[in-house]
Amino acid sequence: MPEALRRTSYPDRVRSLLDEVDARSGTAIADAAALLLPAIEAGGIVHVAGAGHSLALVFETFYRAGGLAAVKPIWDPSVLPLDDALRSTRAERTEGLGRSVVLDAEPAPPDVAVVFSTSGRNPYPVEVAAECAGRGVPVIAVTSPEASRAAAARAETTLADHATIVLDTAVPPGDVLHPPQAPRTAAVSTIMAAYAWSRVLAELDDLAAARGVELPCWTSANVPGGDESNRALLARYGHRVPELGGLPDPQA
Image (cartoon, rainbow, N blue to C red):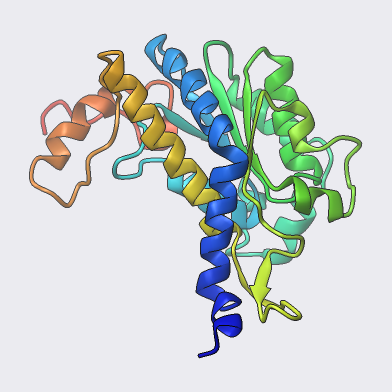
């Protein structure tokens, strides 16, 4: 394959964007880890939000092998596209819904909020971030400023406007990458946001190790000892994170 074509293949374009995340967000990733560690040490919860396909990143942060146990999802069933896709789009654009889910979750210092939204222009993620920030809870926005500038403005502000830290995912407007001359398929936002979050976790682990702090992280339930390791975390966080399903059975 000619070199010019190889450089514009989908895998190469994804790798280029991963490099862009490193270049644009390297400092912000370190800042995010430095923000999260003292919050977790102080008993805080990481409230995580997204809507539509950004809920994939909420899944990536919550009850995930190797992920933080101190995570609570902020969400409303109407923003899930699996049983009514058009409803989820309408919900993300409905004013007041983002604010209401935060009111229900009641985040407060020393908690931290992480909000995933590629465009960051719809009312739902903007309201989640604004309401958390208004409560004194710092916000980490995982978004693409480039995509945000090109998106339709459906709120007076953007997600990034309410963030303490912005992780730039480098996702292009429209999300898609292929074919390079006129992109129409192969969305990349989930890849980029998951990579950015994984980099935060790696940085957080290094920082915790350097300070002699043991992070509360889930172990895969599919490896020996996983269930036993996780039982203590369920007891520790089950009271604040009802989405975990409550406390483990003391007779188990």
